[in-house]
Length: 111
Image 1 (tube, rainbow, N blue to C red):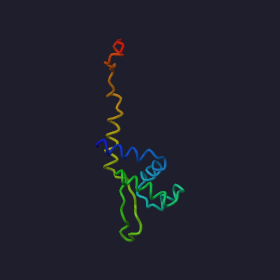
Image 2: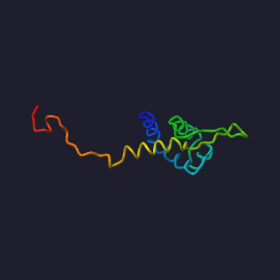
Image 3: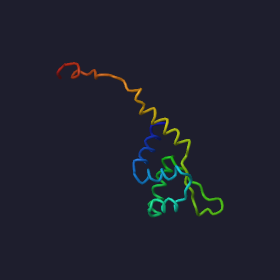
Image 4: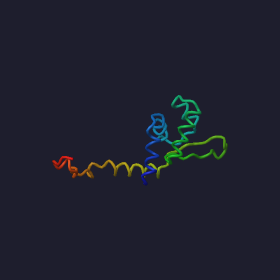
């Protein structure tokens, strides 16, 4: 996953309400009215947060086939897996190297 895409996802997830929405969507697809009811939020606030999650690529939306007025939201598993791999790589403690800075101050030199 490219850095810019990971940054968009992490920014989207930096808001507590969006984390709560993601936790709800882990349980399966929900329409915005179900999200609003489950989290006791206004429809407009839920729509805003869902739009941010969709724009970040973490959530996909789909209109109801029988009534296009309703939109269901689902986690994009492909993107979720990419984020998971990127974060596991970034936070892998086995990658941490022991190193001291090489600039003059660290070598005992004065500037």
